[in-house]
Image (tube, rainbow, N blue to C red):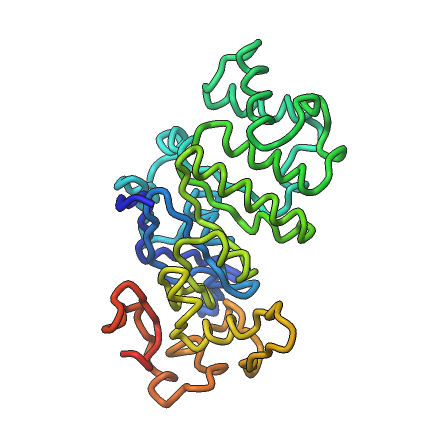
Length: 327
């Protein structure tokens, strides 16, 4: 990991209008992402974890402009604000920023062979101009992700789930990106295949100097692959620090509850599970004050009124926590 900032997200929000306001008001907005700020350093893997529905995928899609962010926030890529760029000016940057999707089957065109799919990416982005150069590049990409070159004429339905995800990784690598968002790339795969894909991603990172934003809900997978980890709850980041510190000394009550749910593989070892009360509120009705206070075992009166900021701890400035217990 280098001490160079490749991505900076500042106060980014994504709000979806569910019902437009009428003559007498009454508009309803779903706040999927609500004022998120973080940075990613060149060459690192930043893990992003949280419960289903907390806004992880929406945040990843907003960074690469597959979802349009709401006004006010900024995404800086290599120091350049890309949130307000017009499509024709943003398109050249898409070669630098790629995404690996959760569903390897749904993200591939069922009517195209692997060779046609990868060849189209290469031609559209001007990596090759067709002909033998494109065919050779496609074969090289299959070698890179561990697929047989003979699979070039196969369709997506002829592959297993793990093989399809390798095709998705090859498609992301085709344009020589420097930053890749991995949106739960192993959650739909068998456990034995998950380890293969994770190790492949780590090998590719070392070989090509890639930077990852790794989105997942499996904390054990995130611990293995990530340098730093950000914990997300109801559209906001509540804690962010390096992986070793987070797993050894979590500070936010939500992070503590998540880590307590990780099963221990050793026989005879049991740890106390922190059970959260109530259900996860939806983005249509985020509680006032600290959004976690209805489920927090340590909540006090001020938590119901005041929204905490994501601030560094005095004893460890590299660990930032959004909780009034530490403010």
